[in-house]
Every structure is written in structure tokens, then in C-alpha cells.
Amino acid sequence: MLEPRRVPPAARPFLTAAILALGSCLATPPDGVAQDSSKSRLAGVKTLKCAFALYATGTWNNGEARAEVKPASLSVSFDEIDIDSGTARVAEGFGPMRIIARLSMWNLHFLDIRSEGSLYITTVFDRESRNGKLKAVHTRHEYTDVSVPGFTSKPEQYYGECEAGS
Image (cartoon, rainbow, N blue to C red; front, side, top):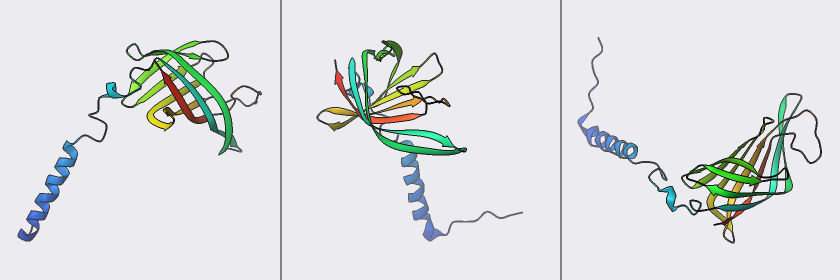
């Protein structure tokens, strides 16, 4: 039978301090967990006008994943944003559509699940890019074997900013 190891008396203060430090780290919530999202400037937003100037597109060539970064000129507008009911309306070329809106801490997420199987996600961060505009990312989850000009045929992720309105 193995005998339990004893901590040498000289190491006990160090071990006690290490255990207390670990305990205090575990007892303290990570940054942001205790923050109130109602203090986010996004909590009262009713409209957003977003412009995305850069995007990355992904594809597979002979089974190998590839990505390419290109300039973009994409605009997406959201209105009728209602954080309490979790809804919003996105204005697109095919007309306005009802989507899911969710404020999570300091980020406002829009989830657009389309009937043809694609998924669009936009996240607006409560962080300024410049001139009061907020950083944002817009992702399109689509894939077709044939590219049609003007339509998304491969996964895309756009980077830009949004202007908030009430």
C-alpha cells in the first residue's frame, strides 16, 4: 500500500497561498459575466444601417479548403428591432423579412434562416470602429456547385460597421 506524501513544512505557506489564489480565481466570474447588458448602447437600438467593405470567401478545390479576401460593397439594414420579443426585420433586395434578434451581453446578433436552406448571421459589437459607428461582421452560409453572378454560392464573411438609430 502506498503511503500518502507529506508536504514539507517549508512548502506549506506556498501551497496555502497557491490554493487561496486558485480559489479566488474560480470564485470570481470572468470579465463581462456580471455585466448588465441593459447598459449596452445596443439595448435600445431600433434600426441599424450596416456597410461592409471587406469579405472573405471560402471554397474547396480538390477537397482542400481555400479562402480569399476581397473588397466588398455590401449594405444590410435592420429595422423594427425588438430585443424583448427577440425579433427584427432585415431589408434586402427580395423585400423585408422577419428574423431573430438576440442581445447577448455586449453583442447584438441577427439570425436569418432562409427557406432555401441558407443561414445568414450578423453580429454588431458594442465597440466603436470610428465616428460613432459600431464594428460588425456578417456571415453567409451557402454553397452551390455553380456560381451565379449576384448570388451567394460559397460561404462568405463580411467585415464592416453599422450606424445605430432609435
